[in-house]
Amino acid sequence: MGAFKSTPVTPPPEPEVTEEKKQQEEPYVIPDTYLGARRPIRVIVIGFGYSGINIAYVLGKQTKNANIDLQFYDKNPELGGTWYENSYPGCMCDIVS
Image (cartoon, rainbow, N blue to C red; front, side, top):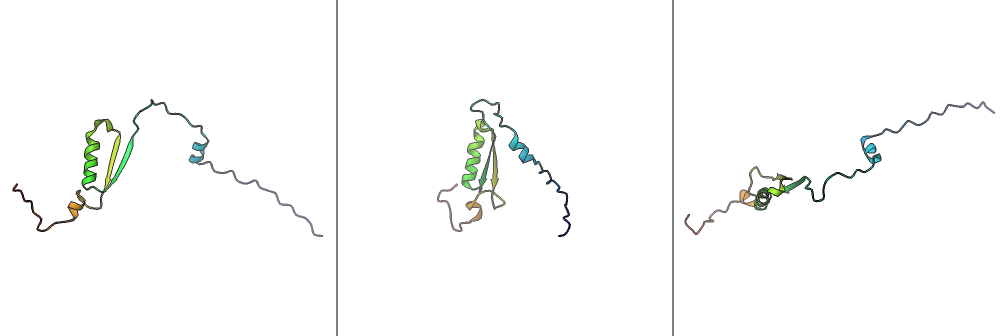
């Protein structure tokens, strides 16, 4: 029989401790806030037509909702939605203004 050659066994490398793993290991801390405290809310509105303009008006008018951050996205360069995109040739108002 041949000679048995032993090779040293190296231990596996230590696992890398990431920031996420550190946060998972920390105990949950109850925030020190009172019941009913308003937290910041981010509202994303897609489309800046009539409904988008209305929600901006309603939420902007209410001072108690100062914790709301509104963000609007629209495919058009200007506001207006359907009224911006479409023109209605021949459409007229029947009341002289």
